[in-house]
Image 1 (cartoon, rainbow, N blue to C red):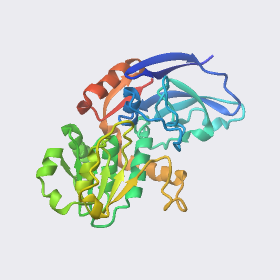
Image 2 (cartoon, rainbow, N blue to C red; image 1 turned 120 degrees about the vertical axis):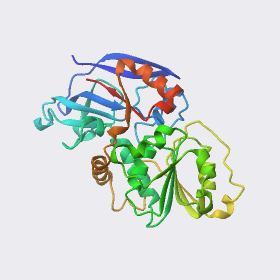
Image 3 (spheres, rainbow, N blue to C red; image 1 turned 30 degrees about the vertical axis):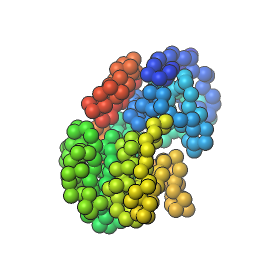
Image 4 (cartoon, rainbow, N blue to C red; image 1 turned 180 degrees about the vertical axis):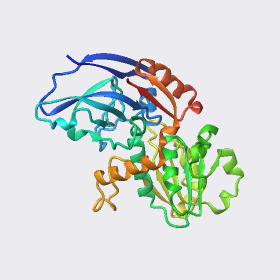
Amino acid sequence: MAKAQTLYFISPKQIEIKETNLPALKEDEVLVESICSAISAGTEMLVFRGEFSQLADSHDAVSSDLKYPLAYGYACVGRVVEAGRTVDKNWKGKLVFGFQPHTSHFIAKTESLIPIPASLSPETACFLPNMETAVNLVQDGAPILGERVLVLGQGIIGLLTASLLSEFPLESLTTVDQFESRRNALRVKGQRSNVESLSPADLRLSTFNEKKADLTFELSGSPAALNDAIDLTTFSGRIVIGSWYGQKRAPIELGGSFHRSRIKLISSQVSTISPELSGRWDKSRRFEVTWKALERIQPEKWITHRFSLNEAGQAYQLLDENPQETIQIIFKHE
């Protein structure tokens, strides 16, 4: 009988690796042996810290009705090692992506798995959900030729979003983050350099405040940053809010210039497609765009740490206490 080592969040800041027996493989299922999985430094850290909200009305099964203890994660890459009787035998040996928690093995139906293009490594493929999120953010923001664009937050979602935006013919693209390593990340290994990266302090001293942004992306994970987004966005501009704040709260200043600004606040979350696009776009088409973006941007250069599943406690402690030292952390399961 196959066994799996799976990471569980037991309570705030308490994790446990549990060994479980996997059920017998059904005729329409496959067994996947994990190779690597990526930690979400945003959503997953809300779960680790106990700051998540109940999402019974969410549009994706991963985030709905969260409660301890739970296995959580959604960026797992592995190889099919066994196939059920009715499964096409070509699946055996195939490299696949699954929206699965951090685990050494899992059983799934093939329709829930995404074959990985031969041009991508397993570590690159771990970025699939984050890159899909970045694609969704850019589509929701709909940048226009010659616009001034601002990205608040340069965690992995912010870096991927800024990388996509750098391909547009914008007047300017400015990114902001409190951590120096993340401000410098876009300049690594030939990444396009048409981006101005500022600290929050530098931003206040820059001339950016005079022109302001036509389009701002709030991706910092901090609800207070929405005030900065409003202050830095011009009349009739758009603010795309990609952060999930969970239970974090901050007062938002809507009584000042915002009231007369006609700024549009756009909530953006990857589990759905904007109604304006859904007549032409579906998840399959968006995944095609996402795979091509991964090939171009090669985000594995932003992996700063690799841990085994048994070292998970160190990984989450690092993210919790010293996030400035990290960009992307992955678990290696081999």
